[in-house]
Image (cartoon, rainbow, N blue to C red; front, side, top):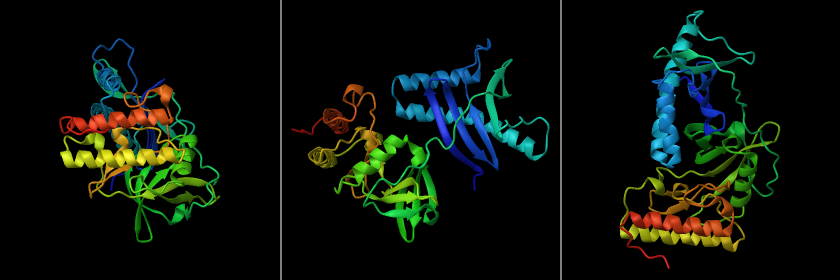
Length: 316
């Protein structure tokens, strides 16, 4: 079993080239890959970060994920070396900060990548639990939920009694987005919209997560290489139907994009992620969380699916 647990990740925003907060072997590491301005033209961290910036500029999700893996590789090897030294009571390991967090930076010095330190701060948990303002939504005790697997950061495959669910932690997104998603899903009942099962509460009665349907072996439409004419026509019809359902109820999807459409093992399309926001290239910021934005996102999703079959599917 791996001794590491990723708690928080930031990259690409102001002052945060790449940062991870990780529990590793009983120690908490705040890892940072920052641009090296110390006249190191061939700095490993600079070359890796430049690839990340280029991938983000072109909105290439596959390349972003690949380069993020490279960032992790540079930092995790240094973290593991520090951990091994610390385990042997070596004086060469980086000293923890006053908060007990080990702040480790990968830094190229004279052409050699080595461990250094930094003074950045990551607050964890990033988002506190929220009051239960969701009347009628079933409540589960967090202590009764068995986490089986972390699908992505703060999203888990879990078991409650004999049933499997998806648990999205309140730490996954800003509290406003979390509340928006629960509030939206609790009023929905549609075969092509992920179903809300309930919310989880901590010992203080605060909501710290939401449970939704677990979709086993789901595939994202954005990851599809191709589709048959039959599949594309079916998905387009189902997605249109679900979006129209939302609008008829006075609701909007929010972050409408192909990456937020899952295909089940039965070949059905399922809309997920109702926390709001927008993704450039799918919905313009000015149409964020509006019906117009949902319709524009829908049209781009349809075009994306059509490309997988050579544009043969009409959608009038």
